[in-house]
Length: 317
Image (tube, rainbow, N blue to C red; front, side):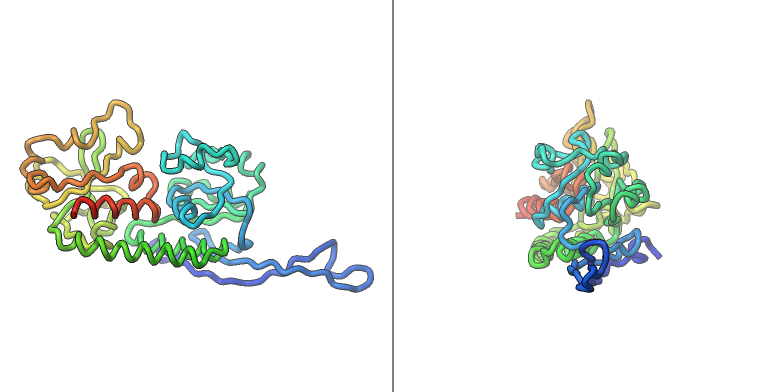
């Protein structure tokens, strides 16, 4: 059983009684009770009960911050500007948003000092979750390769329950579904293609069920070749000769070096500027789509995917 199938999302709204004062009854025997609603989220790290509308929220995952931002959820702490893409410049530049370390190395002392009501983590920060759980309720909301669309929609609906934004979450999911259907119809009719990533002057290809399976699994892109990989998050190294032989009608290109700001690295356009790539239908028909690599590589949430759909639609029009 895959990690995702072992932790399918479910939301179980429950009510918890919070006692006011030192005891349920005062000296006169009068009870003083106040009801506080909670939601139990079946996250990857177990069934986590959190209060609805938590006030102080710390986020250690780009995909989740993307979704929370789309829903208008206020976030109190994120990793430092040095590790965050410009996509989140509003948070990075906000003096009220605390710096809580990095995705891989959270500043646990800083997090504890914020006394958060909820911590949301996943992906690159997954290994830090056991220590984060000691500070406050923590949700592992990792999005896995294979069903990224389903995972992201589940997370959005979950946050709708937690933050009392059910309407916003349902509208976001509906918009996502609608755009996937609209653009997917164009992609499926456009011919075959290949999703590739450039890094250090080399290329790797991704196929269905992979980290970038979205293009095939959700949009209906026909793979130009059978791409396999031992790990879905890592592509299959592809020679330029193999790319020329595959002769894809379309190339969907992600520039990893550009996304992470690798100094001195050749941009994807330069990497693909050679005689072998020029042989492909994609090159000859001007059908190479350079995606916003920062968004799709570093962020990867619903908003980033909606923006990617816009880029693809423009290219296909």
